[in-house]
Image 1 (cartoon, rainbow, N blue to C red):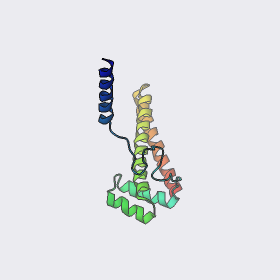
Image 2: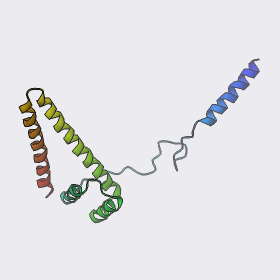
Image 3: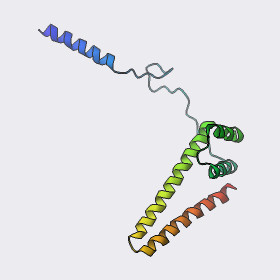
Image 4: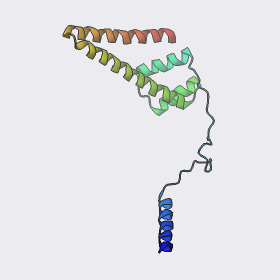
Amino acid sequence: MSHQSSARRKSSSALAASSKPAKMFAGAGSDPCVRLKPIQKRRRLSRSERATLESRYVLNRHPSADERRELAIGLNMPLHTVQIWFQNRRAKEKADARQAYQLAAEGSEGSPSSASSNAAAAAAAAESRQQQQEVVCV
């Protein structure tokens, strides 16, 4: 009886092992700690590069793949860097809008007139941040 149960255990464990997907990394063998590409140091953008990207962002928040490729070639930077810059810039704009909305909502708890003034103050703060960034980029 114990022989049957051990045989049954072996067959069930063999089935379980075969049903699990193999986690293999291309070119890394079975060692998941082996990196395929070396980690690159972060490269800071120059003021002119940032100004170029910002001016394109104002025109089009979602550039096509061809437009991103042209930008990358013109700025002599990796295409992936340009793509990530646009993603991060959209996320920053969304976070700024969320913060302005929260400031306006916090102010509306007091009185209706303070809500509009807080919204205006938040919009003015966002605009001044944008102008400061443009001044730094130019």
